[in-house]
Length: 199
Image 1 (tube, one colour):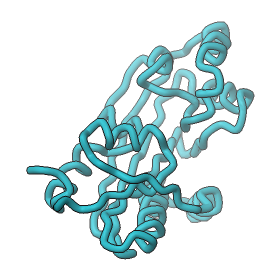
Image 2 (cartoon, rainbow, N blue to C red):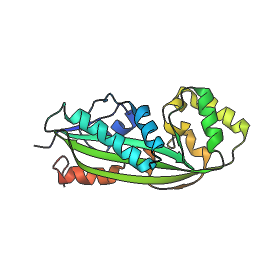
Image 3 (cartoon, one colour):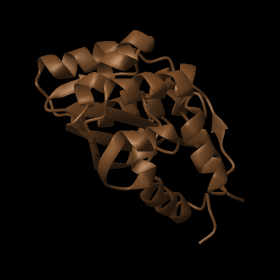
Image 4 (tube, one colour):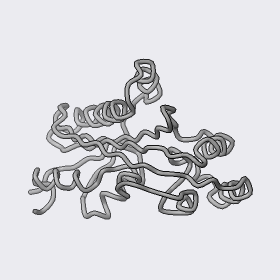
């Protein structure tokens, strides 16, 4: 019998990635104060990698305490542009400001995944992608925000690379799944080793 797998996240994208990869998974969103933790890591001048890993672990451990024996996946993603961390925009005005700040620059998407069982971390991985936004015009930005609509608020950086967001970029270096928010291939490898997927 395969292991029970739980995704400690409310992210529809992460859930879809796992389901489309053939994994039967339950999703439970943990109650975590991400802003407080990010503020603490910023105050310590810690790297984005450390914050992403800590948030992913906190989510996984918290849910694993409620699901004894299950393999619980926690994940987090940080957008770092020259030392400035970006969150999901609160509204269209913030989305516009984020895209203006990222325009013509290269930023990093740092994605961490942690698996916990019975309240203990048993595996983790971190991957980074580098994305360069082209120097798009204000007219393009207006059109982009109009066509994407409320979905612009659903992701850090105010874009979805799998949609119209692709038009924002001139260069992308890194794994596509990492950019979407989950280092999927190493995670699937670990889950196979644990018996949650066929080898």
